[in-house]
Image (cartoon, rainbow, N blue to C red; front, side, top):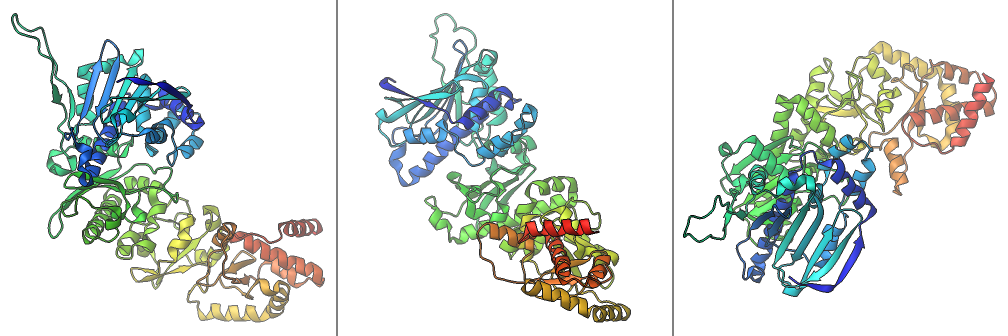
Length: 632
């Protein structure tokens, strides 16, 4: 190949320099991972070309046997990884190699603590496979030409991983991509043929394309024999792992396959390998990651499984194969019934795909249920990473709502800790005799939920309450009406539905009658800020609380939506008071109406803060509170 005259130098983005420094100096404890990552990238390139060739056969003209070649030069200290896959044009090189503009990278860098050991554990949460080359190389040269482009349109990218990279146009390059690693002095062991073969067998034996190396030659030819040039030989099994029988695959092979296709550096938490036969035939290999990616909650987060048709790669991130609440699931699905030219548009409405999706969802939920039943500690580990996402399930998947509900976990007043370990089944088992409702409360923090005045009567009666403090909970509970025939009731909304004794009812009526004057005075001050003021039967130690309507959104969620610019329908809470509280008794004796008004405003603001709402006049609240403190 001959280079043109012009060589351009480009600076890395600041975050790229940070990332490369971390990777080179501390990230990989196992340096041989670099080869797995580069072979995996080459396999992806071959997959993509094979798919594009379905509709444009000319892309494969002249070189239809897709493969990955590995070569090394011990004397020069280089390792070369070459594929004849899809390749890249100049713009794609800049987008995919010259910069890191992938979702999650900024969050990764923001999360770095400066502790190299701690930071190195973050790598599994997003993919930077190509950059693993710099762990063993002090210079990397990449030459590539996109399939279908002219021979003089190739590009060479080169960098030492410090602060910049160069780009130049080259001619006479073959289709695909060639990566040459110029190894560091301490890492030249990787330029050995035997070492490379062992790494390939260990990490990349499952790659579906032939991974070739030049055959090894031992000794000198006998006298009179001509020395033959070594020939290329395949060093991997080159078979789709998911197409093999489960009995032929050990745990290590499953783990390495996951790491290769998902660019994760940690073992998966669990997996499920399934072959379905019947009306529709397909094979699925589904994985649960051990750690959540940084972009799990981002709007433009990409997710989904790899879709194959008869072992031909069709697309990455086939999001129609899994609902959004299972977007953390990774793996492959290989269908025997979809057409090879299937597109994303066709996937929108396809009976075969619907059957695959339905079956795959059930496999994932069954895998999770088995883990919850048989390995509760492992399930607790899963819940910490993905529990909030799974809570979206009841609102998104009506068909599997009951099964998803059995997987949900919450904190509760049973233990009064913030560990979300209580299942709905456990709650129902502990319900009191005659109790027919599941009580819960939502708040913006565990402390707010645990300390809510709405729980006072329930605690007094020994009734367990689920404490919900994830942002998704308020939305999620709007889609849950019952579980196992037991209806859900919010402790902060409407009537608690507790059957009081006749003695309790009579006492409440007498208290309400005695407090009529105080109630009217409070209501006159609050005016249209509340819908009603009444004596409470749910308070035992707090002076007051705000009670919402059963269909109203929690105040802390209303505040969040208002901050985001959303218009909300107007609704006023009910202020419930506890006339037995010393503060209310002091208020009832106040004859100065201005001072009484301050007492009422202070009472209302305290109740608002306890619910996670925002004060309309924070300065006024502080002034009134200070005056009360000074006067007392």
